[in-house]
Amino acid sequence: MDRKKFLKKSLLGTAGLIAGSSVVKANNIRVKNSTYDKMMEQVGFNHLPNKEVKTMKSVLHKAGTRGNANHGWLDSYHSFSFANYYNPDRMHFGVLRVLNDDTVAAGKGFGTHPHDNMEIISIPLEGALEHKDSMGNTAVIEAGDVQVMSAGTGIFHSEYNKHKDKLVKFLQIWVFPNKKNVTPRYDQITLQTQNLKNQFYQILSPNPDDDGVWIHQNAWFHLGNLEKGHSEAYSIKAEGNGLYAFVLDGNISIEEQALQSRDGFGIWDVDCVQIQADSDAKVLLMEVPMAM
Image 1 (cartoon, helix red, strand yellow):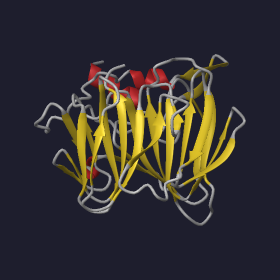
Image 2: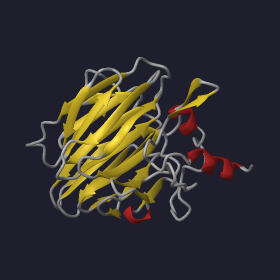
Image 3: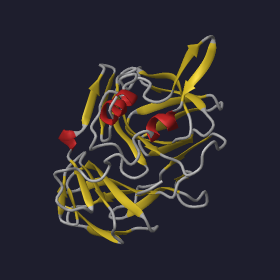
């Protein structure tokens, strides 16, 4: 089997319904298909850059070019190859492996399923998502919250739309950790963003004492709520890191690259990037290591 076919086969799974580890019985023994191992199979395989990009220091992912899986109860857009969506030019951006833009129907959701050795970040955009896990956590996250799980040695969890009469929309993001087999953990925060216009506020870092949640990786996430015409610089915090921007709403330009809602843009080998709001806009910035 050639490498392309092998990689494609390795991504095929549960059409996004479980979208990670699975548990099967083999000779009456429960065997876990590792989330980490499954996702690591694609690391380093043509993840930078897309063929049509002229500069070797940036990659553009237009919203309309993302993968899509619509299961009725779940409508999911994939910025990177995931489940039944396979694109050899869209494997990952450094240690950023999954960026899914999910809409879940009223009362529906993901049944209990396992993960291991992955940092999993959920950012609700609309509605309320109910979470339960094998660590004993039961929680509801809503727009304005950020949730993180370090799957570590292994966890089971479920996610459901809490409401029976409205959609829930959220981003699910997976980042490869810099430590394997840590003790699993869960955390969530509510952001105090009422007066944080025209700046990037930190929602994630490697440091438990910093603002936001933290993960086992040298990564920083920021959200920006920018008014039309405002320009803001973002400085890369760690050598070897790149920046992947995902536009949540409106129009922005990064280093003169025009971006619209749900576009993604990655840039690396830079110390600082200039971001301008071409309309009122919201953007998520994800600074991550470009190598494991």
